[in-house]
Amino acid sequence: MEEIPFGERGSERVPFFIMKIKGIFPLKWLGINAIVLYPFVLYADRKLTPHLLKHEEIHLQQIKRYGVRRFYTRYLLEYLENRKRGMSHDQAYREISFEKEAYAHQSDKKYQVS
Ligand SMILES: [Zn+2]
Image (tube, rainbow, N blue to C red; front, top):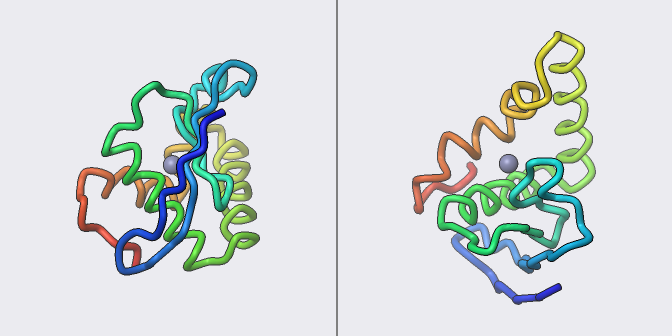
């Protein structure tokens, strides 16, 4: 496990750390390239692409806006609601409001969660 202090970024000034996970952690098995476990961004990919980094940065800003507990509670509840409505795992994940916002704006370097 490699730890890179990433410092404070952008106007939101959200401090976080990026950790590269090798081997044991089953991110890849779950089809996950990166995950925010505040204040850490864990990633399985060899390269953390700019889009993926921006995607995770948007989640960090969402966490700052909603608070850690509210963010993860709402994230999980929305996922479970989507599953209950008959969506597949991938669909249910993509339809989470936090994910929709992150995917919609991950190509925009300047995007800030308002
Ligand atoms: Zn995401």
